[in-house]
Length: 241
Image 1 (cartoon, rainbow, N blue to C red):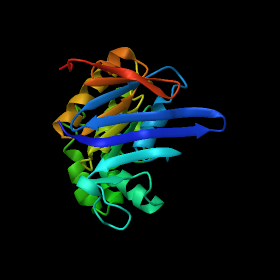
Image 2: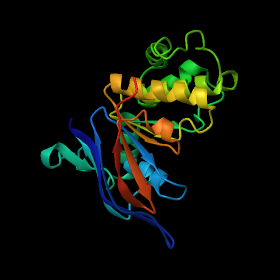
Image 3: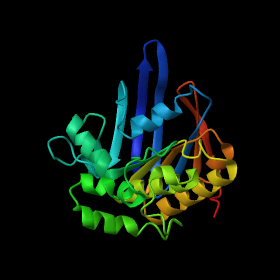
């Protein structure tokens, strides 16, 4: 299995607090990687740094197949994303990354099908075509009949399934999930994480997920343990079907 995303020597400080202290991490193709640690350990900062939302103070974030700001391919097909300009970085996040957050962050005024289609429309896909592509996700995710429901008319589990479909709509290389089951009850959370890990793998995407729940993390291929901004080590699981 090749590597699709790497963080090398990542450092991030907030005033006198060090959130990341020289972290190295690799994410493999079609791999699901859980990041675990106590509150304040740096796990969300690590996810946001890998996703290009936060810039590290030191170190590098490398994405396979990325080009430099000048358009020149980097050595061996790799490119740094932490040094890209804001416009380039924003475009990269839209096109090559997908995001699932704890509370879904769906737009309340849009029906489910348009929430899923939104990333496609932002990339210039005509609305009719984007919605048609979004509708393909409803059957695989158990959402048939909910196309016109707005977020306020969906259960927590249904909303997270819509958020999962939205993250995958652009066929990203990596999906980032920050506590995607944190607002759900245990049974619903289990259903959501099973679906999230399965569908990302089937679509050929990698998954990086922050969670505080060891049962949720056990659905991933590997678990990265962090504390005080440092990597303590990895655990490897047999992937739960």
